[in-house]
Length: 340
Image 1 (tube, rainbow, N blue to C red):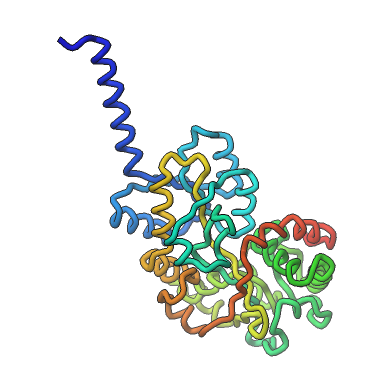
Image 2 (tube, rainbow, N blue to C red):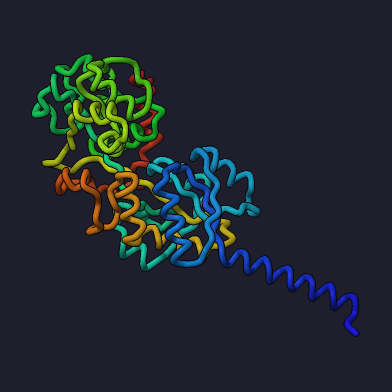
């Protein structure tokens, strides 16, 4: 006869094995990205590996704070977000653990990887200059630095300084020109604004098309979405606006990333690393490009007709971790020059 104590032990073992089985076949993502393309990537990962993807979505800061509150009991295996500035903030909070993956190290360029493997960039997002095709000669501008020239007073639309994309752009200028040079640039842009900062990147493009300003700054994929929109009015906006890829004769156009890292307390670390490696696969890289118009992080991956039409671009290869390191200084500069 099996004793009551033995039955309890067997029951406990069965529960443990069941929990292990569930854990071994799943990965828990906390994601600040909200794109249909990402769901296609999750589905492809599950189809290839059999590992179920559990998803929680939210804003970057909210997800970071949630992971901190949950502590060692957090189910989060991976934090996914956009912009090196947000990844840096998460890392400063101790959210990530280092990952040493031969696949990631060989597939992704040095510039898109944290130096110690705390996070990795899987898609590139170029911050470009838009102009009014009917009222502006694009030969007047070839680099970001030109936006601060006094001849463009009252001609620029751009987002708020609280926007992480702008913070990272300025952080790159801190790296190249130092604090003083970056502040001179920021002051010049403030002096040249056509209106107070407002709206998102798409709003800046629409403002150019509407004649509110001749120049604007935004990420490239917002423009690509308008070009490919089912809405005739959106496509007309895109046709009225031209795009400039700055600094092609120098360091290259500023690029930021969509990236991810393994959470320090990840209960499914092996699955998490496997998921990150899948994000660097040709399958996932092509979904980033085809579905959301982001540039692949992996060289040689097919893009899409819009991205291909822009040719071989010179993209800044500064290590994007610098954008996070310089973020606090960039924020201070914005405050000093009154960039709201």
